[in-house]
Image 1 (cartoon, rainbow, N blue to C red):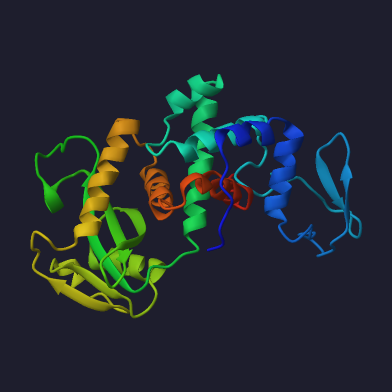
Image 2 (tube, rainbow, N blue to C red):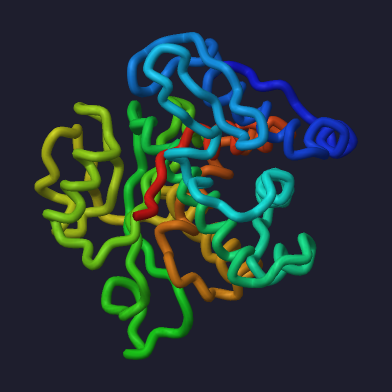
Length: 289
């Protein structure tokens, strides 16, 4: 992964304090090698002043820097988007919609919308990466108290499947998490097919759903205390993340899992995470109708 320059808070305030500055940054991130018309491929364009759009010189197709992304049809200023991205990226605990609405002086619904779209971009960005090498795999259960009073695989809490790749020396690398309806073999196989490089070595317990997984080298055994250290640590930290910042109220659980993994997978990048997240938003795909 190419190194992204770090940015301080002082530099952020200086660099992104106007709509034009934010729009120019989104243009740079969206067209890193120069403008290319998404319709005809022409590389020549001119700005349409007063409308904040760009027009292809060949086919006259018009495009804005937010078109087709999670920012599509936004009515919020780009400066607010950049503030939201910065606050979301630089607080390791995450930021709730309530806190974001207070900090930016916007209504709760707008703050929730911003964070939901940012988390969508986070998830899309990590879809590009597959787990390989050695991967710990397990299921977990998150949310409030169990309604049926059971624990573990018998609980009625929300179910998730967690995978953490690691080096040969057992240092953690990347994490993927998926909210699921069940932990049956078919569900786990779909995750293997979607998230794993073929022939990856998978460490897991000997629960029946894991025993017949295909396309990977399976190392399933009876659970011991020190086994699957990193995947269990990730689940534990995820629960603290959900409870500490969001008080367990996660109406779209997968989005929060994507946010956790985005942060985990970039935990060594320091101040670079803001620019990486900005790039993820600028190059995202709209999920709006």
